[in-house]
Length: 231
Image (cartoon, rainbow, N blue to C red):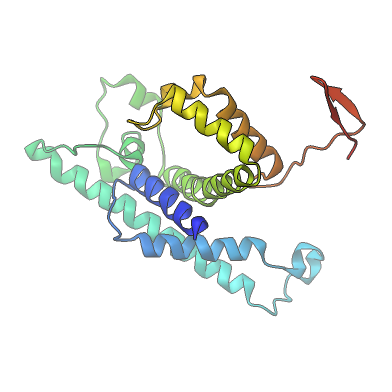
């Protein structure tokens, strides 16, 4: 199941980058929360179409939303508390994490009493203050914006390339010429991978992860010698 493999990849990357853990501990809860919200976002709710019937909830969506939000708050609070506890413990003996994650960086600007006073000499930290709700909101954005959406884009890109063997061969040849076969793709390579970037952009045009704005041609046009029909 390619979709499942891609989702697990993006989940592991986001979980490690954001929360500083590559272990499976806590990831089951993380996945369960994401899946529940995905179902709720796509569920039919009569109040969305007839607002004054908000009290009609045959599927129990309102209760599920409250429960899911409470689970999400509890999950994020536990992550923040764990990082705050670690920061407090490391101060006396000077022990520092090998790699600080996103939550550590956000807590450097946390204005709560739990972290104590920020050094007056640090102008940037004095200028920017984040509340606990600010940090939770950023974590939520990363959780929902960096997992299923990225996985969906990767899966669609692979599907479209498999449907077009010539384009797939061209992408493979470009990767071989620019990157080679002995190392992984690096961020600095992206500027040289022109056709690869075009494929990604075309995938996002055809299959936007969040289809709020769909691009269609209002009238027939010719662009770069290619006929674009009206849609």
